[in-house]
Each structure stands twice: as structure tokens, then as C-alpha cells.
Length: 307
Image (cartoon, rainbow, N blue to C red; front, side, top):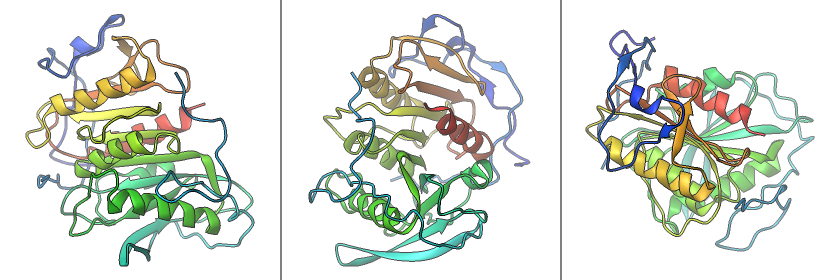
């Protein structure tokens, strides 16, 4: 646990049942204390109606479109270690680094959720602070790529959307991936990329957790379950940018403007969302930090809860 990041606060103005959810342009509500613990990693401060089918196609996809998530990897033997193994994949003629976490108890006959983990600016695929590995234990495959030069492109036709597409497609041929349980989780610039993927790959992603992320992408037209975490003291990505992202999910998912308290505190859940596409907003009193001891278990609990 972090020794220096204690005392996340419940922002009580958001946590009253039946009260309007915060707007992007609004100020922070008054707060009351609650003792939550934040992450060990140093913060990254270098930030430069239901559209999904019940099942996804199992093979093939048109060039430039969302990847078809294969299941041909089921039944193929693979040895998990519950640690990150460095691998590479070619994207547009460039070898891209990623790190793959395969549970030690991996069973090739079982379809696993897959979580794409996107680091903050200046980091790489082994950067700490998100703690999804500890939260998911033996129950998820985690793919943690490295950005080029430590950064991510948020262009809809950029190399990092292609990285997601290609890596997801390849892992579906090598491992037993559940095509209906594809998730994205990222911090800071990785949160921006998560928001972009929700916009342009909403028919592929089941749920997303951007931490300290800003909106990215345009003309989004698919519903995606979303759990957003943002610190009101964030001086790198202002909380208003996180609220703008939450508002986008709220509108796309058809939720009302009202919210009610949700677990874990200090989160609130928008009311009126479809059961498959909830939107949860978690506003803390921390600054620009991945808050992994909070966001990691929160993300995994959210992913697991989705029907």
C-alpha cells in the first residue's frame, strides 16, 4: 500500500440517491472523508439503444474494421506463469512490444476474459500502478503493450487502434479468449486510448475503465459499459475532462442525468442505464495518479459484474 496517498474522499454532492449527476462544466461538490488507499506507483505527470450483437463473428474481419475475435485458440496448450512475458508483434512494419500475463492455472478448455492494460505517458507495458493483475488473480488474460516512445496515438486510424485489433485477433488464435469479455483499462494517456477504443471499437469491447482519461474519438455509435475514475485534484488531466468522458457514455448508453451511490465508495452510478451498459463515475480527492489499489479491484469487480 502507498504510504503517501491516503484519504480518498467521498464527494458527497455526487453520492446522494436521486440527485443530478455532475456535469463536465460543473465544479467539484463538497466532500466528506472516507479512508481509502491509493496505489504504490509514482504518478505519471507527463501527459502530453444497444449496438452490440450478443455474439461476435469467430473468424475473419474486413481490413480497417473491428477485429473478429476468434476462438480457435481454445484447446491449444499454453503454460501460464502469473507473470509478464515479453513478446513482440509487427504493426505497420514496426515491431511492437507487449507483455502477456497468463494465469498460472490457465486451462485451454476454458474461455477467459482478456484485459488490455494501457500505461500512462512515458511508461511501458511493465509500468506499475494499475494492479489489475492482483485483482484478477487467476481469472483473466492480460495484454499490456508498450507505447511508441512511451506514448499512445489517439487517431481513430492510428497505429495503436491497429495494435489493439491485431493483438486481439492473434491472441484469439493462440489462447482461449472469450469474445464477449474483451475489456480495456488505462491510466492518463492510456485512459484516453481506452476512451478512443470504446468509441471506435465499441462493438468489440464489453467494458472499459479509464483512469484520469479524457474523451477521444468522434461519432461514437455503440454502447459500452464504463467505470471511470478521476481525481478532483488532477492538475494534468482536469476532472472536467473525465466528466466529459462520463457524459459521453451516459448519453450513448441512454442513462438519465440522475445518480445514486454505488460500491466501491466514492462511486456513483447513473440511473436508467440498460442493465448491460452501466456507467459508474468515481471521483476522488487524489491528484494525477493511477490509484491502483482502488482502481484495480474496482475495475475487476466492475468487469466481473457485467451480465
